Amino acid sequence: MTENNTLPVWKIVAIGSALFAAQFAWVIYNTYVPLFLQAGSVKFDALIQGGNGAALVVGFGLSAVQTGFIMSLDNIAAFILQP
Image (tube, rainbow, N blue to C red; front, side, top):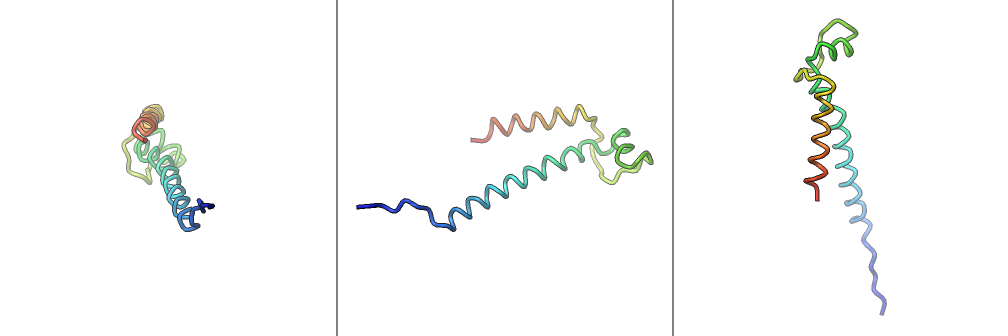
C-alpha cells in the first residue's frame, strides 16, 4: 500500500501567506518605529526637513543611539520570546 503524504495546495498557500504577512509587518515595524522614536529631536527634524525645524511626525525626540538601543532590545526580546 502507498500513502499519499502531500499537502493540499490551499494549505501551502495559507502557510506561505501567513509567513509573508508576518515578515511584511516586521519590515513595516522596523521602518516606522525608529521614525517615531527620533521625531521631535532637533537633529532629526533638521535632517528630515532640510533645516526648517518643523517635524511631520510627532515622536519622542530620542537620539539615534537611544533609538538603536531600544531597537536592539526589541530584537533580543523577540529572539528570546519567540518559540
